[in-house]
Length: 506
Image (cartoon, rainbow, N blue to C red):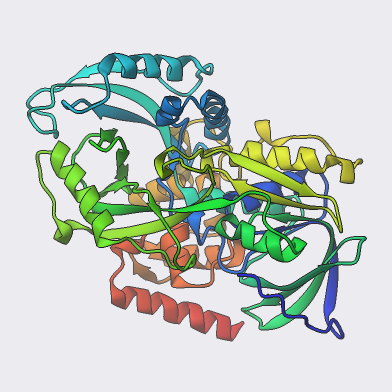
């Protein structure tokens, strides 16, 4: 949260920017990248780690939103499907097409209506990377309960959400942006000619003044609070904060596809293959008024998700089977009298021109972050008349500059024949061609350094600290590698000790 504590600017260093973005989630990182690529001098300020809030606790999907068709949100679905194609081409290492099966029970939506909805979903945009939907029949070999005989299949994509944020930050940095993590805004004011922003670096325990012409508020669930403090009035749009929780279970089936399960209350729940060993189940939707920094799953949410798994699958599960869980807060734009499940996932942008230009981002979803950033910069264009035009639609994100995963695997295996295939596979999924940067000047496994666990070697850890803003074991295990589920407490402690010693040595 922003604390407006006035600090004397005397003896503080000062840096001038064209644009300063507050918030290191997917929208903030995307805006910083777009702006820097247009030639602006940009800074992104994030009080914690990149993707440390909602952007790392999503359902990890790039999708059009099939269920939004029920709410007649055709424009949002079409926009999302268009972005799905663009992002799949831009980040093919972390975004993969995935089949979703919709099993039919007696209380499911009408089959004919579903077929019509899937037909619309198929034809809202021209497909390049995705197959069209089809009807299915289930036999005895199905992992589903024997009463389920039919269903449908359609395609969307799975994404490593936190790495999508990170590679956007890397793209911004490549174009000259300063990415300031663990840096909290402690004071901000306008002099009528621009913004003065005092920030505190919690790593170095130092203060710095930043000045900028335009400020962008991309603070996610905190956007209304920040807008009120910046402008001294009520937020432009009232937010409804909705908690979405997921559970992680041992793999429920051996198929490569995901499932979309229809609950009797009208909600839909995804069961998604996750990290090769698990099934990700979610999400719930619960009104939230608690601590925005520490949302957690409730027993009721956990039981709700377990119950729907047991309704559909042959192998039943219980609380003791849950490997992990997480919760994120979605900042949805309030619509009075509308249930949380039906509130639009679209976004709105609000521009204040006085006392100095400030744009606030309300709502949004992972899938539409790129076009949101493009629209932000188009709105801010009059303040920067000499900047270049939009460019991200055809740009490749860092690590995504290859054609086929098989060819990338072969290139890595050929050049680094001593590197184990399981490490290569994980690295190509996480880093793409950035893996070559990690491996530069290595000639054997001895050059990889100590292994902290789960094939996480010092070489990779050092890369993440030096190039991807990692500071803690949590940063590395949960937001950059997703290896947290495979680490013991002792291994986490060993990694934490190494990071602490490295910081002290520096």
